[in-house]
Length: 433
Image 1: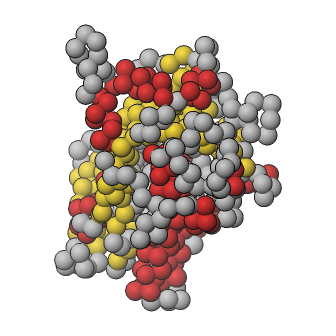
Image 2: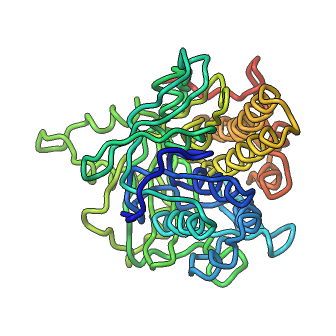
């Protein structure tokens, strides 16, 4: 913990030091504003979400940390491979189609997030780890008035209060503003998913010896209940995960073993590999599960009715979350960070009024979320109805044409051309369990 005392007042307070929070803090500090960031954990800290999108490189360049990131040693990722129907050939989306500068990485998130947070410190952001924001003080009604200060608790039990002019809530899924004060978070029932994953040694990498080498692999479960991922990492391990709706997950976990006992989390996890032959092929005979590495989390999808208010912005998972499929979390988080910093700076400079700035931020964060949501729901529709062609052209053995749309510089909404069934809202429906 830093020996510097947390200030009594800061122009901007950022809650949370993940990619969204650290990015917003860096941009605001570079614009000359006093920025204090409070993070409840001690970095490096574990976090799932190792698969990145090509947009990351552009954000890193803008933040001034691209070279540091590139030199860290993360595993280069030229694209991603998707097998949504077991009987059809997998489709690969080429992130480098618009040039080598559009490649990205598979990352160990504890290392990636620390690179970004330390960069914020180098830029002059006052970062205080192991400091949890417990509550926020408002000018009046929290749902309609301006936040003025935050009450925090340090790891040693010391409590304090910091006043601010502007608040950026990047507090992750806990989302203190949305859940505790605005109470406007809306859960998406058909994407109430659960993820279980673990780490392996000696797993083969997809596309070795080709331009596809080190791509992430995503495969639908053959029983139409979810999907799996394989993400190779630069430390030699491979992340292998399973995602399915909570209803399916609970039903499978409740199935008794031959001896009449319930399976452990690891046993449940390993049992799901029977449904993904492509994953099993990559694991092969040499792949070995690392004992004790099994983890699980609820990957519930949600959004909110607003992502800003008088002198505050909400970004990252504190604002919304689509789904782990298509790896949109960091992209949406950093998009929100740039939006938050831009609208705050513009308001401070008098270039725009605060109300208009709020509307712009709400639209930017909301649109980023919705575009990925459409693609995710289309893919889930296909994975849940594998006997039908939902995306792509009829009478083909792949979804290449559809996945050509999912690349740098192409709007995710373009995939709508290949969705054969659409609900009245314009989104493909995933059966609600």
